[in-house]
Image (tube, rainbow, N blue to C red; front, side):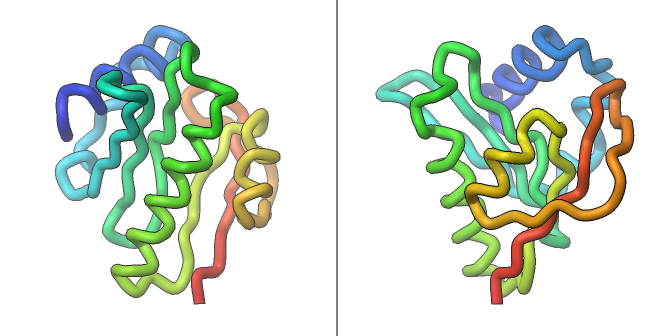
Length: 128
């Protein structure tokens, strides 16, 4: 994982959302494809794609939210998953962000559950 991706995740998840560093930076990072979006020269967002098609650690800096960068980042991750011949993408969405993911075509299922002290819901997107 690149330093800009790690820095963004530290700012958003550890500092802003108070997620414990040991939960945020995990062993799965080594096997993921990491994505970085920049605004000019400024790294402002990141996401990761696991080998099984799960998308995670989607984060946009507070200074860059509401500009459409999250959707652009997610479209790129989804297209990468399609190119890898995944039939679906899955993610664990913080409940406040489910509307964002629904606009991208993800469908929520299952009950709300807590992860790192934050309510989440599982969502999937069929790629086939």
